[in-house]
Length: 407
Image (tube, rainbow, N blue to C red):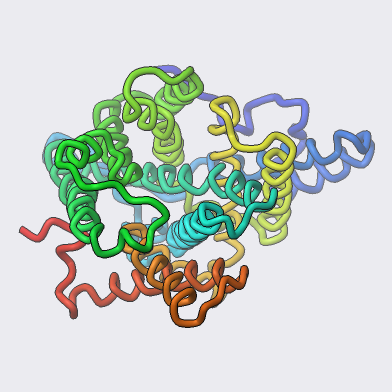
């Protein structure tokens, strides 16, 4: 297996070789950029910021590791001083904050789509919001899922890992497909368009992922990760990215899995090293976030929705922006609130449509209002908060079976 050089060993025209630390990198970069033509200044600032982030993430770990070989497999355990986002004794909120922001964008996107479909919002701003949100919010979920795949497989083994994903991912997909089909006669009168129920159509939708594409595709991405676990992480990502930009072929499920798997592969490559982003100085994180957000906004504004050529790049830059924002918010009350939402993201994804639709109908039927901001923000807020309450009360209300196989 070949060795990939670290960032500090690479020679890049926009990465100052004199920098020996993150602070040196930023200081030398600022000095070098003073003589840069103004038309290329923004591009170079963006590249230097990304380089600083990557330099922090990819530098060798400072903690030691213990290799356990009693079962014939390698289990990596960090020593006490190395924090991990999920498995460590002291939980980091960064990953949960990213999930919280991303799931809020999911509910906001769905609310905005409902307003567009009803003819309440037909401006270019609606199109821009849709293109901007969908350029990165779902890739962020696949990236986050990939961060902990290797550790999960090493702890459980391939068979138990598969069974766990059937119980926690495939089961809620199937259950809520049945639930929504069962309540369709009751809620269909409030939807823009409904179809009569047919068993054949229903089963076909379940089989090809149309019932709820995200969980279905997520499950098969997990299985693809399991099948490729012995492949070097960098090589898996490169192959996945190359396949992801190829023209669509085969059934929709195949295309969707191959389109999204590169983000899970990227997460597997980074792994639990993502926690090192906490070491970024606040100023560097803020600068990186502003530049990435500006880049993302400009690309979507001038070129529209992501294509097969730009989806991977925008998905990764947008996800990087979310992690930088999470770094800035981690110690703030807002960050703790977003982490609270992020830990309930599965329930929000599954139940938000009910809360959102009910709120919209109350606004229409009881208060007789189509006021723009009220119809956009209130359904989004309640579609986020009410399912989160259900998630945290699932044990008291005995609703855990909604989210995980109960037997």
